[in-house]
Amino acid sequence: YCSGNNSWKFTVPQKYFLHFYVVGVAVTTSLLLAICFYAYMKMTPLLPEPSSYSTIASHLIGSNSFSFGSVLSRTMEHKYRVWRTVFVLLLMEIQVLRRLYETENVFHYSPSARMHIVGYLTGLFYYTAAPLSLASSCLPEAIDFIRGQIVEFIVKGRARMPDLVIDSPSLLKPLLKLGWCQWIGAIVFIWGSLHQIRCHAILGSLRENKDSDEYVIPCGDWFSRVSCPHYLAELVIYLGMLIASGGSDISVWFLFIFVITNLSFAAVQTHRWYLQKFEDYPRSRYAIIPFVL
Image 1 (spheres, rainbow, N blue to C red):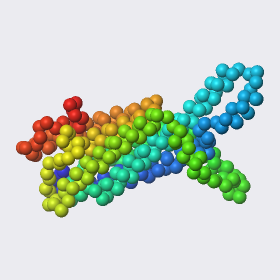
Image 2 (image 1 turned 90 degrees about the horizontal axis):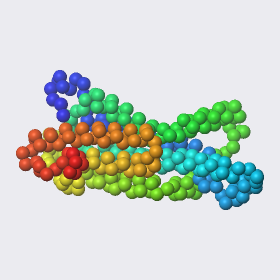
Image 3 (image 1 turned 30 degrees about the vertical axis):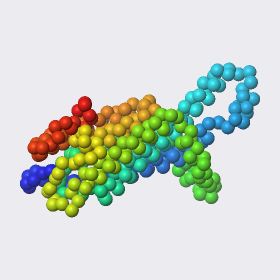
Image 4 (image 1 turned 60 degrees about the horizontal axis):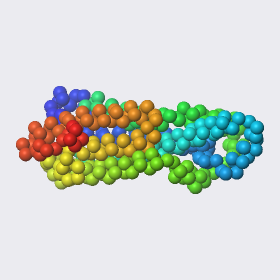
């Protein structure tokens, strides 16, 4: 919150949070479509058909079976990695679409609420960088494939290009055959999302039909334990994405560490504000993580 002409100089309305999620949806959707197209065209089926094994084996009689097994294993791991990326980007797409909806329909920003221009630019950068981080493990090869398809289309023309037929079962099967990490990650993601939905509804209701500058102590759900449960839920959501990614991509770890650092700092500032503003504020609440911070 800023007041006075001077403090408004380098600020924008807080309702501009909407721009973060518009950018997030645009970037995530573009990446999801690109990598999903690449995965469907080049990484399907995820598991070789039984007949494929016999066909391959018949051509490799007398060759080094260990070498064949090693190549097959690397191919399978590569396919899993690409489809894992599709899965994680689907989770990110759900997250940014929901946040876009909430910003427009759940929150009631005060007309006087402002945020610093640096925070605004950081938010725009983050919602561009986050989906790129999640997609980084296979994005270069997906871009190369799509570039090749575009060149082929230009050279051959539409009439000589094969028709693209999307077979829904073939698209869904690889996602359903991913490992336990992906499903545990999805469960953690859903758990965090449900709590964030509730916490955002509580925060959104605080200004509903109230004077624009009136604020009360939020209560309910994880607010009984921490001052910023919506931030805690965000940490849980990104932990779910980290688990779903398999935890092998350093870029996803950097993203998670950034989220922890950024939200912890913001939560501590918010917690201090609550303590200063309300004399009767519950002293038992932590800032963001119960019994830790």
